[in-house]
Length: 509
Image (cartoon, rainbow, N blue to C red):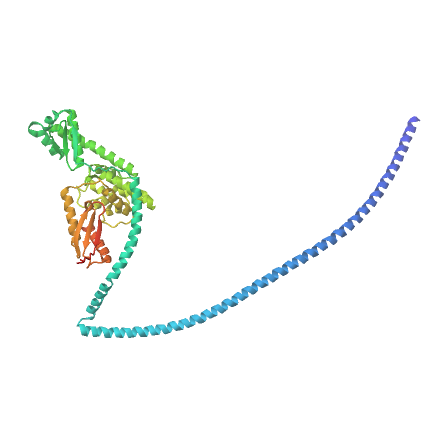
């Protein structure tokens, strides 16, 4: 019974709860519907406000865009109008120019006709004058023409000489300043010995008794030594030394080594002399190779053919006017390289040409011809490039220089040879060269006297002032210099100075 009552109470409670919940949900739904309606109403009102605002903003924007469009349109219309005005002006200018051109063409046609007419008249007059000249002078037309040309040449020779003088002065002034600057820089940066090579070698002896053994019985040892080596052996009263004399340094060096070996060995007789001579020759070959390699290293030149290296080494034992040719070649390479660097030229090529410029002197006593030509052929044979060959062959002017580097090699060669103490020559050769120089200058017409000064590096030529003016003096200096270049051999650079002096003297009594 209790259990039934409990169930019934539970059912009643559930039913009551359902009714209460249903009433609560319906109330909430009703309130939600009311809230929804209110929200929709508010949204509609806000939408109306936003729509009205956007419409107003759109109207403002449209108005602004319309104003901008109007401004752009007016601006473009103004630009188009400006272009149109300019085109109209150009058309007017072109039309005026066409009129002017037409008028000028008409004038040109008239001038052409006038010129043709004048030319025809001049031709007729020239023919008549030629006929009259032939009749009067009794000459043919060719003879008369030649006479006229000769007269014109004499008439304008002075003017041409003056023009030549002015141009030459201006160019020489600029060139001399630049050349002096570059050469001064090269000389300042380069240091070299100022002593020329000697032609004798002194060999010390351990005792004075060794002299007798060197001479041998009845002089057989000294005769065998001199015949084999080609060197003069001088045994004098100076204690403990003998002197080897020869103008060939290569032979003198072999003789020195031979004599030192004989003195060290103590056994001196013709057979022993010949044996030591052959050993000395082999040692010299090694010295030659090392000297060539050292020269290439000092000059900063790489990639030389082995045979070229040997020929360079032989130059160590050659002299020119007492100047060692290998040292001279290294000097030329370094001086030319410095000048090339100043001028922005190819330094490597210039150094190579400078080092090899006298390579022909290593064999010129064995081959006929100038050392420049021989050297060029040797360089070509051993794979040197045409520019290097040209620099070798042109450094004495026998061939025209093909590159600026070749010109620098020739300049550096003259610079190295001309520095104080570099070279020497015998008194006889020196006097003969000066006399020949003066004779050559005096061979020109209107030259009164010539004097060689500055150890033969300058010639001063005095001319007749009444027959040579300033402009002709310039030409005379040039012609004398060219003739000296063609006919004389001289070290370095030779300066030609033409002096024209007019003196007027009167006496008051």
